[in-house]
Image (cartoon, rainbow, N blue to C red; front, top):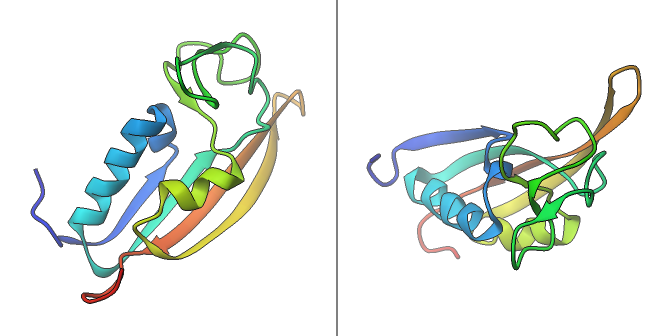
Length: 130
């Protein structure tokens, strides 16, 4: 319900991952719409290789999206879980410019599980670009 070009910054801390790839594209299109030209998007999302990746029921037609996982720290009551591969980052954030990303790795439960996370920053181009 926000007006176009409203925000200077949007922060996503592991929320977009809980959607299908197609819905994630729609969400990112909406973020683009509400950002002011030059506005920044900061996004943190689970990456492929996180403990449990590949261990559950896949969402039909999606390589890295699961309706449930049988292993790992994200397995119980998380709903839809999409792990982002490095190759998907530029496709998902295609409308933005200056896309930069780094990988964080951390463990949980006394190093039993490994989280691989992407930290992504980019911005909406100024008018006349893109």
